[in-house]
Image 1 (cartoon, rainbow, N blue to C red):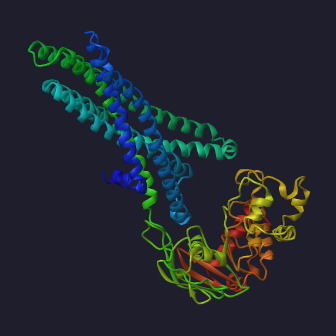
Image 2 (cartoon, rainbow, N blue to C red):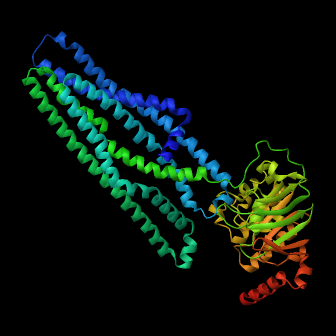
Image 3 (spheres, rainbow, N blue to C red):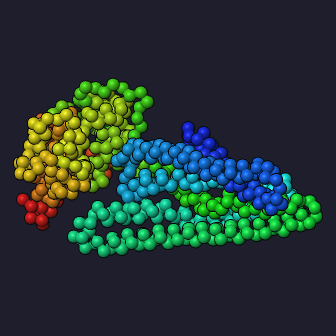
Length: 582
C-alpha cells in the first residue's frame, strides 16, 4: 500500500546495504538447505561403504554449509541491523524536527503521552518492516524457488509437492492468520498511545489527582488501558500460535508426500536410492525459510498502523512557512507594525484573529485583554512566527517579518508564556538558557527585577538549588517569576508576556502582574492578560472579543466610558468580592 511504500522510501541511501542483507540472509537459509541435502546424500552413500575419497567432496561441502550458515546469518544480522538502526535514527530526527516546526500552534490538542509514543514506540516499530517482514519474505522467496528447482531437477513430482507445501505454508497460512490478527494489529499502536497518555498523565499529575480525590479513577483508567492493550496483544499471539501449528502440520505432510513419491520413483527406477534421502530431507530444511512468514505478515500489519501514525506527524501541515532565502534581520525591530491582521488554526472554519492593527514603538507598553478564546494567544503566536497570518501585514523596522528566518524574528520578539517550561536542573541553569555567558551580577539583576532575589538568597544552595521536573519544587508564583527573570535576562527588544498570572490564585497573580509591570518599565512590552489589575501603568489597552478589536485606548479613559472594558471592570470587582480579594 501507499503507507508501506513510503515506509520503504525512508530507507533512502541505505538500500544497497539492505540488498546485501537480503543476499546474506538468502545464503544463510540456502546453506541450511544445502547442509541438510548434502548430509542426507552423504549418510546414504556412506552406508554403501565406498572408498573414502568418493565422499571427500560431500564431507567438505557439509562442513562448508555448516560454517557458512552461521557466518552468513551473523553477517546478515550485522548488516541489516546497522542499516535499519541508522534509518530509524534518521526517521526519529525527521519526526522531531517536524514536531519542532509544528510546536506550539500545530500541536493544539495533541496529548504529550501520545506524541512520545509516536516518537519512540511507533518509530521503533518501523524496524520490523525490514527486519521481520521484507528481508525474511525476500529470503524465503529466493530460497524456496531454489529449493523447488533443485528438488524438481532430482524428481519433478517431488518438486511439485514441495512447491505446493511451501506455497500453502508461505502464503496460505499467513493470509489466514493475517485475517485473524488484522483487527488486533490495527488497534495495537493506538492502544499503546492511549496507555502512554494515561500513564504520563498519572505520573505527572499524581499530587493534583490525590488532592482532588481523582487518583483511584485515573489509576483505574490506566489499568483499563493496560488491560485493553493486553487483550489485543493476546489476540495477536493466538494468531501466531495458529500459524506455527499449521506450518508444522503442512511441513510434516509435505515431507511425507515427498517420501511417498520418492519411494515410488526408486521402485520405478527413475531415482537412485542414494538420492531418496535428498528428496525427503530437502523439504524439511526448505520449510525453515517460510516458518516465520505468519508472524512476518502480522508485523507487516502492525507496522502499517505505526507508519500511519508517524506519517501523520511528518505530513501535518506546518503552521509556519520559512522563506527559502531569508532577508537580513534589522538591528532593531522598531517600529513593530501589524496591519489588518487575520489568522486561524489548521482545521478551523473561522478566524481566531481578524482585522487587527497594532504599532509598538520603542519603550511603548500595550496590554491586550479579553475573555478566553478572544484571540489573545493567537496574536502572541503570530508575533513570534509560531503561526502564519492568513491575511494582513507584519513588519519589523519596515522589513516583512515573513521574509525573515523565524529564529531571527524570535531574537527580536521574545516570549514569557503562561506555561513556560522549567528544566529539571538548577535555578542557575534555567536562567543561563536565556544567556549562556551571563555574569553573576546579571543573574542577580534579573532575579531582583522579577522579585526573586531575596528568596534565592535565603536558599541553602542559592542559585544551585534544583527546581525539580517542570519546576515541581517551586510554587506557581515562583515558577512564573523565574520564567520572567529568564525573559528579562534574554533582553529581547520586544517582550510578549502571555497570561503570566493564568494559573495563579488572584492575590499572587495580581502581585506578579504589578511586579512585572514595574520590571518592564521603559521596555517595549505586550502584556496579554484576562486580569485588569495594574493596567493603569500601560500606554494603551486593546480589548479583543471573538478575534476582533472592540475597544482600545488608555485604561483610565476606557474604564470611565461605557463599553466592554467597563463591564469587565465591574465583573472583576464582583468576582474579587466573592473570593475576598483586595
